[in-house]
Length: 513
Image 1: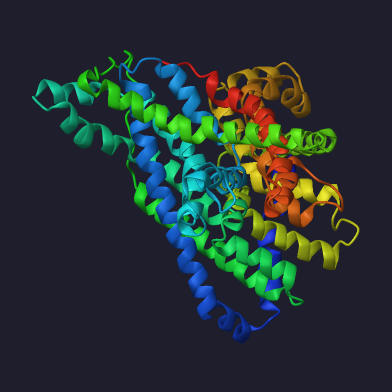
Image 2: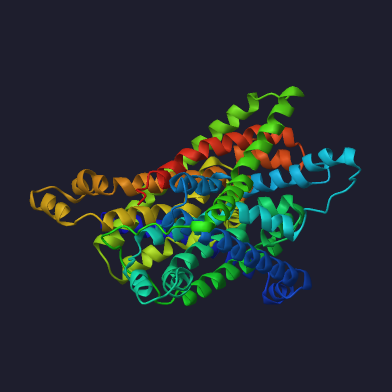
């Protein structure tokens, strides 16, 4: 009962937003719902969203898989450094990537200014699908890179060695032995990229590519009747559910064998040494060096023009405060769910755990819209308050904390807790003095991951944030949407700098073979 009741309350809170979206949409009647769903413009938005997700996912896998293999299995010089640099673009929000692309390649961008003396009056348009896809690919491929690289490092290499001993070449062994074992990791990373692309709001808005997220925001802001926005949000939820179903079917029962006792011998690159180094350098150049360089350029240009940094510190504090609050509450909510799932497995605990993941499948724009409707109609005292905003963060990012805490508890022996109970310690005492310390690594990792993702969150903050409550994310958005690039540079750089330490906790401290 100590963990069952809090876990059940957490699960109920996770279901609230989607239940209210369904309720709000049903008020319109089935005729209006069908009219909006099957309207030509809605179907066009659906097609554009699916196309963007497909292009981004395919390109991200194409970049990440060879990059993971080069940094995990070859004799690439400085592969540990390349692994760290390849993961760092994860801290760059997509809307910052969109801002960088627009400021570099847009009609008034840096490249246009540089080429103007040479007589180049206009560059090809960066807006639309090419720009939106490029911005998302460059800053989402680390999701695939990290999962695939972890799988490569933990994979039993005996199958590859057996294939090589039977005469298979390196490429044949890779495609016939290694790659099939990597399929679950590739699919898991690709799922994260696809969900990100479907729910992204900032990059697609800046690069003028209409997807569900952008259309929902426009409907919410411009229409007097916001019911169509709720229906579009449900369409997006159904699309996300379809992606999850495809992922589950694709994953099947495939897996890779457990880690072997010996580390894999690095594959000599030979004459492919220079192409491999060029590939890694190019990825880091376009995903890390150029974005930071462009932001520094606009920062210095803004300071020279009289821009002040004073407003940035207040928004930075707002971002750190609300992200820290969300991270702390998320791990507190995750603890009873994880303990119930790991220590008391069964149908009820399994259902509670699955319900806790609903918020992750719910795109941020749809989640925020549901809470806007709920707050304005049933809880006006909570509407546009910090409490409702933090609740949205916790609902959306709770699965990240649950997964980390659950993994830590699975590695801890329950016999320690049983020994404490046999010595007369009560359930609360065992939880506070034994279970929590055992799960400490998971609590820290979960808090770091929630903090990192909350720092970057944009649509929920725009729709639910209190009046005049700005974060670094909204500051970047407000400046870039008005093409004030110099004003956006400082908060964008600060956002990246603050987000880097949580990524350090999650990736850089790993043991590299």
